[in-house]
Length: 176
Image (cartoon, rainbow, N blue to C red; front, side, top):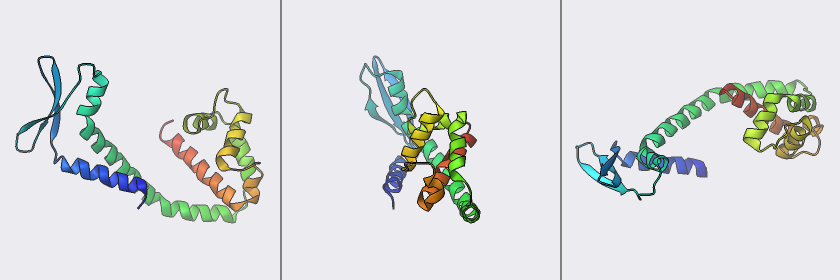
């Protein structure tokens, strides 16, 4: 299991150990604290905040279990979606590889695309100004190639390009 998988399992176990307790922000005088209400109605003070704690810090702690549960549900949905599309993508990739494609030209066109440049900026640190030359340079660095021509000559580079292009398309689909 990957380190990410191990960490996800650890988070799930810790969330399950909370046993559905409801965390609430409570105050007594000038003291703010988190109180966990158990399934049996018992109230347990589990955390007291420093007077200098910001509202955002307090919200993050109080909402921790709820936020973790929400994020785990998103991860689970993403895993299901990937598993459902993986067989189709594998077959699609094989058929694409049978047809010779000019990946170098594709990459050049993407580097001229404003959305692709935004993707490079947001996801891969492309610095402004977002020019086609800067995009091409960043893409070569990400794909570990010296020239886009390698995308047509090196199958490993071509596969990295196809994966990268798929990540860009997925980024566009989720509303960027």
